[in-house]
Length: 141
Image (tube, rainbow, N blue to C red):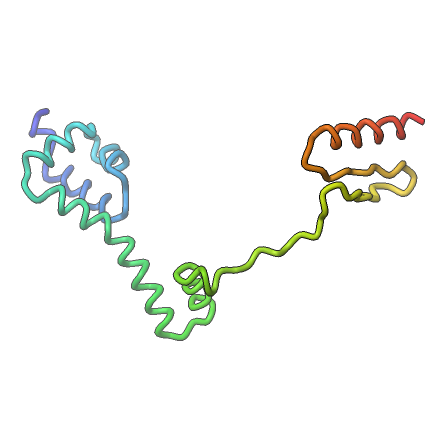
């Protein structure tokens, strides 16, 4: 690697990208260097790898700050959202239970002039195929 590629301008672009949460690959694309050039620079420049990781943490910190500011303003929606994610066992949204029993027939009214298809909801595909075949034969009648 040529250290000449690592100009102050490129290092500044890398820092800006990392502070915005970019991956190494994305930052290298913006700075127009290879990932190998970045890797070599990190090895030869003490503290740069740690600085990069600290910069990458900035967007997370900013997001936390925004959430905390909203909580300080007693924003109910943010409070609910926060609890749903941080205390899932207590506050996560529950999925509705379905009351479909396998083997139960469900009739779908698509058009009153057409024969009604029946879908057999079963765990094996053979029953589903049979229900489909039965529906096709009904239409031909």
